[in-house]
Length: 177
Image 1 (cartoon, rainbow, N blue to C red):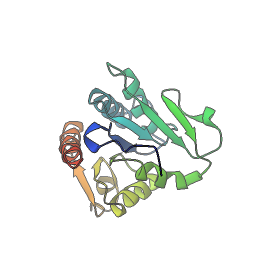
Image 2 (cartoon, helix red, strand yellow):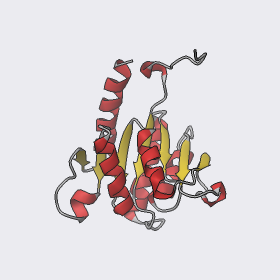
Image 3 (cartoon, rainbow, N blue to C red):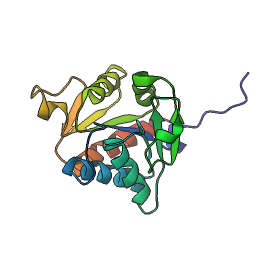
Image 4 (cartoon, one colour):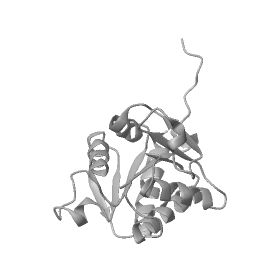
């Protein structure tokens, strides 16, 4: 018999994955958007999960760290070396799983926020939808690819709308505990 007790949903800090392309340059509009997302998550006391590398992942971690009070951003890195994580992470976890770490990232989260889009982002969106996680997409695949929103994805038009929908989902999540 396990001596560990379960933390009820109402008492557990939510974990939200933020996914997006690693090729986004610091200072670009998409980078600044992801940075705002990180700051908003930290302001709400949400633990942020990301892939731990550059681009959107660094931007969201930077926003989490710059918030007042600063939040927590955990990077799940694809390789075996935690030192390759971006400089803004609170914690860097070397998974050694390569792209398979996308599944761990999504599974560990209560919701997935996609900022922008790349092939890796698309895989994380698909995994989130497959696991029935709420997936909110800002400037993602529905905008820059086919013009259609991937199934299970809710397209949003601003950081504010993304946070409103996420907050609504988390309120329902916590009430289930």
